Image (cartoon, rainbow, N blue to C red; front, side, top):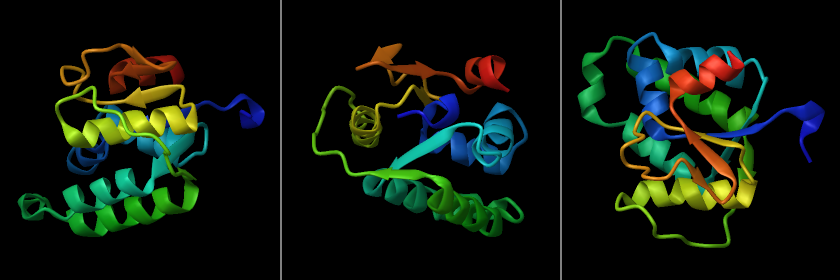
Length: 142
């Protein structure tokens, strides 16, 4: 059920953090692909609450405008994203939060999981979802 051939993506939390603290592929992906609605962003309640909790950490207060921009990004994501409730639980990665992304990938039948942490994900694909760096993703679709 891919609307107009749009593919489904999942953003690891580190992509959103990177986009908010510096210019680069993560911010290009969010602005030019996700917010321009050229791909469908998929979230679950658990993934979204991970975004929210990470983005509210004190260590980010040293970046000017971080809080304001984080709120804007989160509310835009909440508005645009397709929401899923994974009915399964996986435990294939040591980082618990990353397993939530994989559960979402299965539930959403996502095409790509974009992460700045390729090291954590020892797999290049999981159940049909390609795990890809922001640079490689942007090279393909930017």
